[in-house]
Length: 250
Image (cartoon, rainbow, N blue to C red; front, side, top):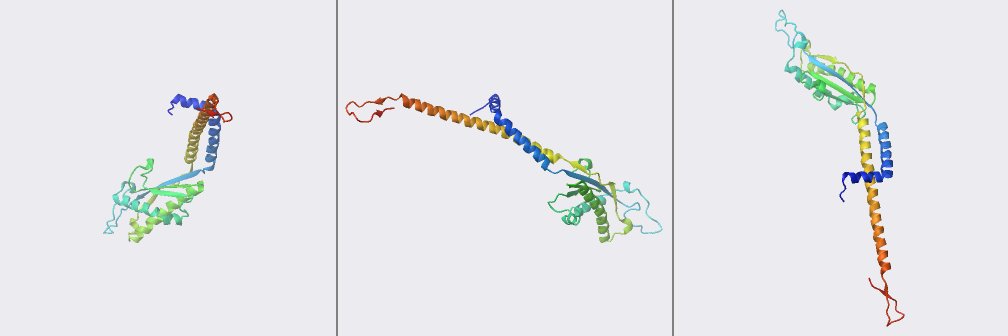
C-alpha cells in the first residue's frame, strides 16, 4: 500500500503511544552505550634524520677536512630512504611486542612519514609516531619508547653496514611526545548510531502496529459481514416432508 509523506506523519501521530516509549528506550540504550565505550587517548611525536655537519663521508686527506655545513640545509634522497627503512623497522610486530604492545590490546601505535596526517603531508626524512591507549600514561609512554627505539635502531643499522661513526645520521626530535588528548569520537559515533537506530525502530514499530490493527479491523469486518449474511438466509420449508430439517440456501 502506497503511503505519502503526510500519511506517514499521521500514522506516527496516531500511534504516538508506540513511538515515544520505543524511542525513549533506544535513547536510554544510546546513553548506556556512550557510557560503556571507553575513552581513548592519543599522543604523537615527530623526528627528522639529518646528516652530520661534517657531511656524510670522511675526507680522503685528513689535512683537508670537509667543509662544515648546516645539517638542516643538507638533505638528499639518502635521508628519505633511511627514514623509510626506520619506519619499516619500527612498524615490525616484534618491536611492538618488545615494547609491551599486545596485538589486539588496548594500546597500539603507527609509524609513518606523515602521509596520513594532514599536518605532515610531505615526503622526506621525517618519521611520525602516533600511539593510542586507554590511558594517557600508556599513550605517551609508548611514544617515548618508540622515539628512543628509533635512535637505537638507526645506530644499530649504521653499525651493521660498517658506516664510520663520524658519518652517522642524527635522529633529531622535532616534536617531543605530545600531551595525550582524550578522543571521544568513537563514543559519540556509537551514541549517534544508537539514536538513529532508535528513531528508525520507533517508526517501524508504529507502522507495524498500524498494519496489525488495520488487518484486525478488516478481519473483524469480514467476520461481521459473514454473520450478517448468514442471519439473512431464510430456511427453506419442505412441505412434503414434515420432520426433515430445513435446508438453508445461500
